[in-house]
Amino acid sequence: MNLFRRPAPSLDDLILDAPHELPSESLMPTVARPAQVFVRGQGSWLWDSEDRAYLDFSQGSAANSLGHSPQVLINALAGQSQALINPGSGLHNRAQLNLVDRLCQHTGSDQGYLLNSGAEACEAAIKLARKWGQLHRGGAYRIISASTGCHGRSFAAMAASAGAGASRFEPLLPGFSHVPFNDLPALHAAVDAQTVAIMLEPIQSEAGVIPATEHYLKGVERLCRELGILLVLDEVQTGIGRCGTLLAEQQYGVRADIVTLGKGLGGGVPLAALLARGKACCFEAGELAGTHHGNALMAAAGVAVLDTVLANGFLQHVRESGLYLGEGLARLAYRYDHGQLRGHGLMWGLTLSDDCADAVVKAALHEGLILNAPQPDCLRFTPALTVSKSNIDEMLVRLARAFARVRTAQLQCRKGIAV
Ligand SMILES: *Cc1c(COP(=O)(O)O)cnc(C)c1O
Image (tube, helix red, strand yellow):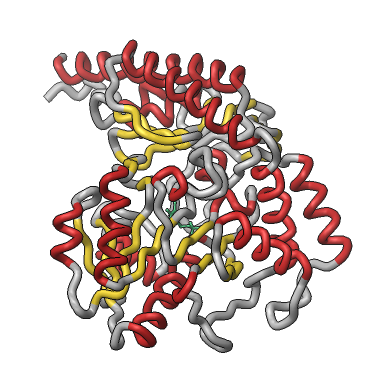
């Protein structure tokens, strides 16, 4: 054995200049995070504590729909916090009433309810569907969802999601089954007398930005009507303009019975919503509550976001910059031999030629670009809905450098192994 031979460098060693120290040992290490600490944000840009600038094409996993610290959000939060932060969820506040009225009006829903997170909204949707099953389908309770779907990390949301590391926390909540996405016959076959609802994302995000086909989603809607069960659409990520229309269901010409919203609705503050239509509006007093449900401060943020997204020309801008981003990504993917591009509006996924997405995310961070990787071979792009063409051009330059950096590291790595 040659003691002087160094171990072959890992891809990470080759991509990053120096290993960073952990910023804190007090924080539970439940999420793998880079070492930088971020202190400032403006629009599509973020700055770390060493004043390095990063172009942010993740935006808190699509939560910061208007970018970092937009003036409308600052004003809404400042105004509301001066007037009233929280009368308590047992009392009405104007911001909450305003937001549910507007959400219902603009999404064609009959009732709405405000919560704190996407997972919570999905839990509430599951509760609502079960309540409906007790009233209208002989106590049916089972929810069918897609085997590659993701509805959050709480227990009912995890049970609906199938993956997401759920098996480590068994026993899971019973009453869920899973079928492959975009497979109508499989879905039809799975419905039984105990089934109360089908719950899907119109575009699966964690699975790698996989849109439902129009044939599929329309077929699912028809199936639900024919069999007398509910359609629940999880629009936590696709909703509030992300895909170029207020809800993604509009692009499919589909109307769900229950819709969940989250992420972009709060523009960066924790806010989610449950919307219901027609007979699905069946909650009564005492069946759903939470200390911060309808919190006035968060609701005021939601009103500011919704007003902005509904303003003249905004969604047109999302559609146009979405196409511009898609074209740019397709060109770059072709140049670097990467694969398929999928998405709508400003939600894109790019499949890479091998499982190097984590390496690209790290290399991109090094180039001052923030991205994430929902799958080992897939990059996800969810910039601010206000992103400019020059932001997109700059992102493509930085992404090209990241691709090149990973290519070089991969070659070196292979050589290292070959020596
Ligand atoms: C992020 C997400 C959730 C969970 O939302 P949290 O706010 O993280 O709880 C649920 N469904 C979809 C489609 C999501 O993208």
